Length: 238
Image 1: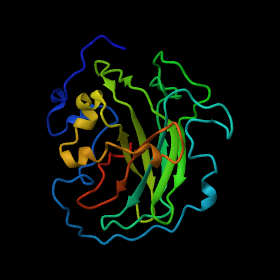
Image 2 (image 1 turned 45 degrees about the vertical axis):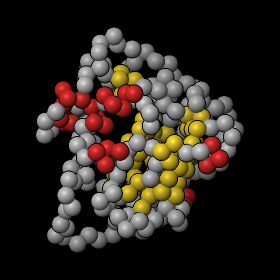
Image 3 (image 1 turned 60 degrees about the vertical axis):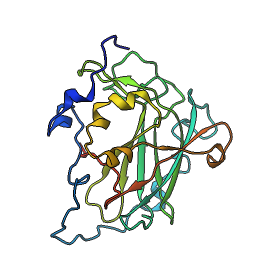
Image 4 (image 1 turned 30 degrees about the horizontal axis):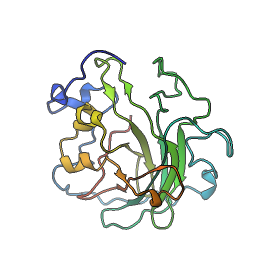
């Protein structure tokens, strides 16, 4: 971990402050300050995504093979619903998630940090929402990690989300953050979202132990709203 002090988000102030952070930019047309007037009617591009697209064990990020060794770290279960602006469930939405391991290390060639890899940690998952728009996956709580090139400020623990659904012309990208994390308060990416309600939409809810569906895990709820006033904050793809 770098000994340099973490910069306060104020150093990224300005209309395009997130554009100063490589690879991160809030899509303002998806997180607007005011409701947008739609001039051109949209048309569906579905139906698609057959059930066979997702394997039976792909909702488990903390294990490479069913019944195999489990990854190190605090076991977690994340569940939620995907809905439209009217609160109606979005069924058969394809959700892909990926994250760092307990030490904040991604198994990716671009991750050149010295943090160790975990041979049991898969680090990615895929699932389809059910008829009520619900999804659920198992993992371990990811660790924080330095972001090279920006004074090595530490990114708080987070999970990346990609959402595909009928009617969407491109995938939607967002991130889940964990509640009560001190690094949330100084993360320029999270704090780069001007609208406080939109920013809060990215922080998961801590659920009761009995809501996890199994013993010995931390449970979190993270709902995704695809449009409307309560829309989840989304980032530009790419």
